[in-house]
Length: 396
Image 1 (cartoon, helix red, strand yellow):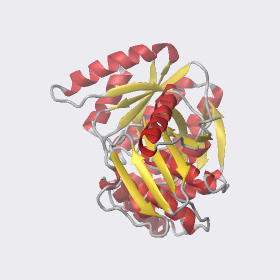
Image 2 (cartoon, one colour):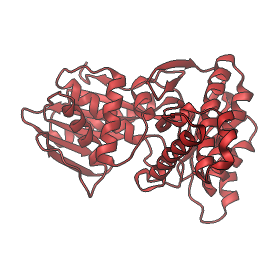
Image 3 (cartoon, helix red, strand yellow):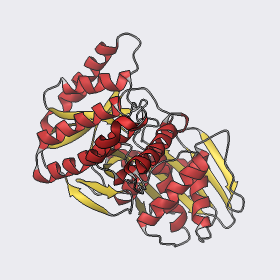
């Protein structure tokens, strides 16, 4: 895979340049695209992501002391800290991902060793492709490999999620870390975010996926993501009271029940609940469509998801809506929607495999025409469902 080769080689070359020796391990962690199931993960619902063939790589070598030295090849920056005192960095947030992972692993009783490391990535930052989970997973597997520790991957996903909560300050769900660890080529992962049960869903032949980055970055920690999460918790409280039964999460309410009390709930709380409940239904319908090869039905579900994210969850934007409209105007596109948390970032389109090049060329023109002069520069690229994170000995 070209992206993995690029970041893989960059990480090794930078390691040689900075540390004057060969790394003993290189860990590759993929980005991800969520096909459908947005803002359902932290509501204990269902998601259907794929790992994609765009990677972050960590090249590393163990040290004899407890110091960790990290070089960020793409940021021209570095970090140094001790495993005996791991603190948040209030100035450079990128440092908090690997620091948080080291903290979380040691909190769970595994003593780590110091290391020298270089991280290089081809995953766009701020495009909704989960560069944050990739860096967490990449460093978590590297730290563990260097002390010969083996942790079940679903458990490790939870530790990485904890690191993001405590150190990066983002109350993310579990989806990104799970798909980065458990992805499989040519498959999506149907994940139950309540109990982490999961199953692979084979994807039909003849389709491809295009990521269309609007050029508008989203800073998740500074966005309204945490507000949406709080609103969902308020919706649970309202529904528990109105339906007169204990409700743990929006996952426990069906659409008929919501309809019975919808007018008794305040806005926008009720619309946030409606999005999550209907989106869970769409995940199940979409994965069944994939199994059956019902591609047009799956495309209509993507469009319905975008409309719900735009109107009920209010996380779309002028640029995201313009991108979906541009994509849908091109022959060979079955469906499109914003992917990731929203507030900028990227859209996903499911297209006919033989239409990929036309979609890549024509969408950019139509998008910029719709937004006019001064519009952000979009980036479009095809992605393939990939395997999850891997660890390699570069000398073998």
